[in-house]
Length: 271
Ligand SMILES: [Zn+2]
Image (cartoon, rainbow, N blue to C red; front, side):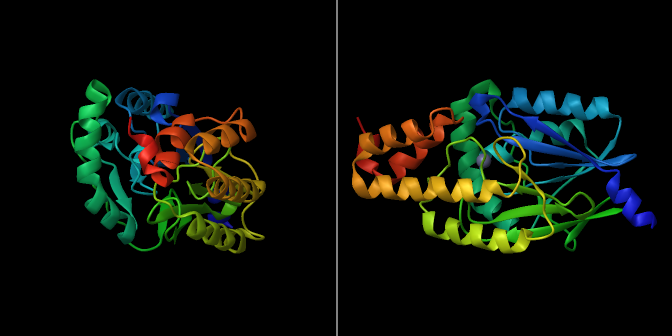
């Protein structure tokens, strides 16, 4: 079975952005000669380190697949595009539309805020052709999920490894980003993910934190429930103390303090 042995030989390498770059993951998936990149870091220095890693691999980067329209997963695409001009930037139609809507304001806001670490131009992916991507002879399946952490999240399943590059559908050891205030729909997406992955996904490759098993679904649900309970019970200070004590060692504390809490307590964000 030629196809199967090609699938089995795929290598999944995780690239972790700096803490200032929201500790986001990008994944470099490679076969014998070809490779794809799943997501691009936000900061220029992180994107540069990732480009060096891709260079060292000696593989031909044929595509960069963007999972969702949040800056920590696509904003540094310009550097990757400049270093690998043959790579096509793609995503699903809905994610492309989300980036067309939100990309320009995210770009101008963050370009000013990040200075030298910011992007020089906005790269908008094109709509991917069909629902698979190929690396050498191996086919990877694209599956999109609706509103939750983001407006849409596009994932890639690697059948031969029972692996799912699931981006921010689940987090691992990281505070959740709840600025879009979709706790309930995110919980529904987790139910869908549970059904989708049953018997065919063993390892989940999240957008933040180490790859792990299906326990990431339960852990993400537990965080959402704890946050929902905290905002019912107290004010912004209370929520911060409660979540920081429950999740003492979680990364990306800025997701909680600078995004999630101000989204639910707008007045607390103002001095
Ligand atoms: Zn993220």
